[in-house]
Length: 258
Ligand code: IPE
Ligand code: IPE
Ligand code: MG
Image 1 (cartoon, protein in one colour):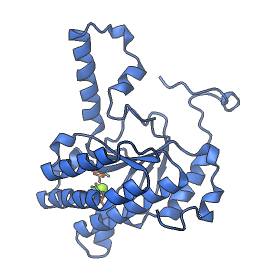
Image 2 (tube, rainbow, N blue to C red; image 1 turned 180 degrees about the vertical axis):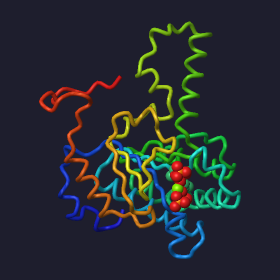
Image 3 (cartoon, rainbow, N blue to C red; image 1 turned 135 degrees about the vertical axis):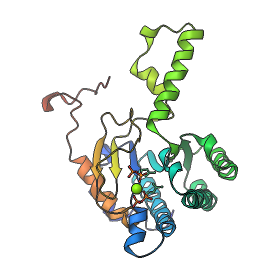
Image 4 (cartoon, rainbow, N blue to C red; image 1 turned 90 degrees about the horizontal axis):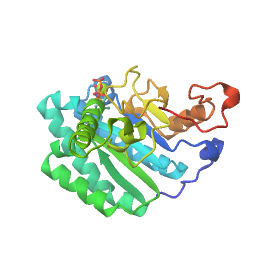
């Protein structure tokens, strides 16, 4: 991590009220490029620099889980040249960030239909995941070929098989059991969901897990997003009252989301 990491700008945050898990829909690379008369790929390249910045910021602030929506199941339908460029960029990112993740105790994890990724990307991904699996400073969780509906479908099929062949009692299926069958079984649900570039939609991201996430949508395009805005959003998050369906005076009790 670079030298001026614990800079004073973090001091405004209440360490007791940091989100455990931040999830980000990184949107707007194409519009960023178009505004500058560049091609979309150049927007994605610039966007991958923002990824580096935000990963560092999260690590320095002390947020345990960061999930980044990098490629959706629907994104396979983009022009082939763009899909290839995105996969190439992903491979480059994995190669170039391996050292940073090892040096900074960051564990890499991935959710989504990893088997659909090109072989060289999968290899690079598995390599960095393996090398960093014992790191416990922070988990960087990349959503790759990820779709919330296909994740739910996978979960339903797995549970259906347990009911049919394994003698599982349907009455024993609880929200916890459902969570255990999702890609995110090893992590808490996101406390904060950020979307850049202003679209007011979820685009098939973490449909089950965001039941009670706080949502922040910024008009900033992902390549223009940076540490200062991220800190402002965290500050905003810390000022919200998360009621989980209760009334304000009850809030000392732990939430129950069913
Ligand atoms: C986000 O930027 C990156 C991916 C979805 C892979 P976009 O490529 O969606 O950018 P816009 O929405 O066209 O501006
Ligand atoms: C969502 O962005 C997916 C990612 C950020 C990877 P999109 O640009 O694909 O979403 P839509 O098409 O605007 O909903
Ligand atoms: Mg988009």
